[in-house]
Length: 145
Image (cartoon, rainbow, N blue to C red; front, side):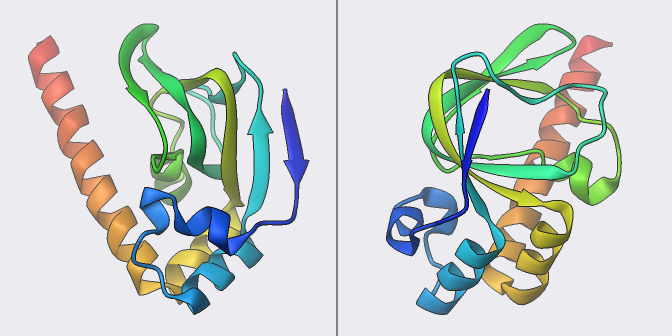
């Protein structure tokens, strides 16, 4: 389901929305910490309710997000997947499934933490993303009541 290729090209990463604004040094750090991954159509990137230790940034392709078996959104290039569970040490909030072949950058738990510790731009982007997702989850919860 997944193919791995350790070599990351900073030029390839620089064109991705999440990495926009990174300096050359920050891109170099991110490429040293991350791993290039190819996911086939239907690959499960995250599985709701399970603990995870990997965070993905979508470079090419898109994926569907499901919560409690219901479609929530389609995400694509530049989106990050799995950061909430990794940072909060909680089970995954959603299942994310590749829609077609995808190219991703994956960061293991320690690599992701190192990225955030060494890179203020990454930390700012992830903090903003977490705030956005927490508010979205809160809205979904209150709408369901």
